Length: 88
Image (tube, rainbow, N blue to C red; front, top):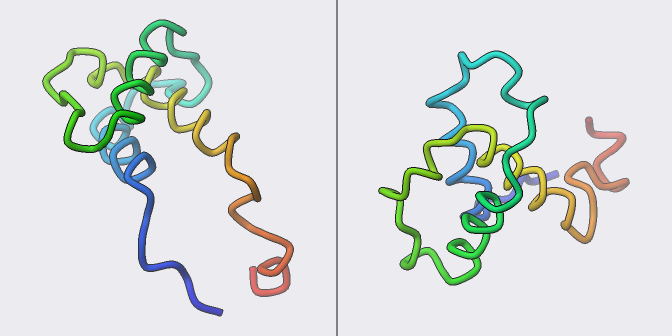
């Protein structure tokens, strides 16, 4: 099987920002504030050129993790589809 060459912008951006805070304890357990996550999501939805990385909310690891979780939850199929089960 072939892995996809392209990673969605939402995943690429969020994972790179999360890596900056990976030493924070409980980074994946704590939930970001809904208003902050909504603000970040709005920026992502308006297009990559409209993302203001200087916005202090992008430096909030819990909000970024929550945004990533939202993106993954809304995918039409899981990342490891049944097609890949045997390969994994």
